[in-house]
Length: 443
View 1 (cartoon, rainbow, N blue to C red):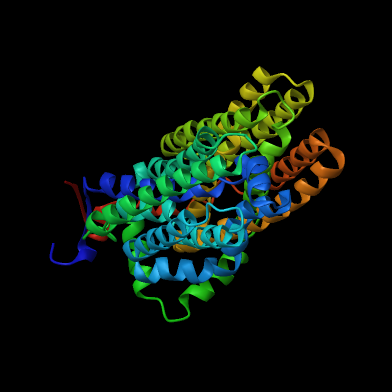
View 2 (view 1 turned 120 degrees about the horizontal axis):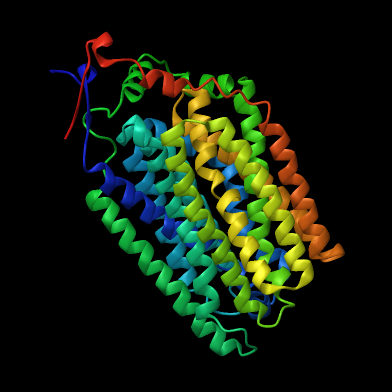
């Protein structure tokens, strides 16, 4: 047992690394929807149109597409610690810039802060599947990935809940300014605490790999050349099953982005719609939080990636139809119920998409796989928000949500031809250690 290549080891500290990352992802995701969920107040305070407020959400998606590959390269080459701490540091910078923008004439500056926080998420969004593979044994990778995604979902939930609770729907700019300052300062303080914890405690990888699959991936990475990253992307895009997953994943996440960004504008006509928008969004995301963990455990127990994907997609389409009907009927209880149902499946699909992608593309780095998935998702997100926003303004919420339902149905159709047997990472993990003169033990 003299070299890393001779044995595997599972470390208890893996749970600390996972929780630290989830905390970082949560802190970043809280910023994403903070303006859109109080859109009417921000439009009044900063004297801008709905499109400008929508862009505070879309900027997260727009910056991801051109910068995802450099960010993925940093994650793959420099490791988890460098990437995650870099993302947390940028988040801190953006958050503290926003602290000084609680003035009606400083929308451009607050948008700059949001832009920097959006850039920061590139260094963390693709981490869950990578961290799970690097730190966790095969029978826990999907659950670990789900917990990593849980951090992001929890942050979005906080972003739905806190801004409407801190900022009132009033017409007094002086009071709104003070409330926005409290909101910005609280988020900046949280970001600073997270950065400090990461610098002190977060580690790039364990001394020894936790699984046969990771050991094989490390050996193949060590045999690669300087062009490995670009050739890996090319090979992934030529993979038929992964290409289908790319588009279906993008459609699902694009619909979620449109739903979240436009929620305030869809519910503002309801009595107390300002408060309900945050609560409905919270309900959807908490459904997704539960779904992410449930589906992660299901995948670890069954390894039925294709069947789970199709089943989730069918229920997401039905959930979107139900939400459309509930909103049309102006029945708030139904709006909450269908949002929870929709979130459980539509948001829960995040974990499944990341893990299915890793299975279809092994031994390519999870960083590259998740980077491509997220890039397509962000492109679909920008298109969905812009398109749905224009439709909402011209034709109302019912037609808008029917269009989003059709997009989900298209994603379902694209999921059906994906192979259910090409689970390469699972096959690699089934190689018996003694067949390769390897040793495996747990701390």
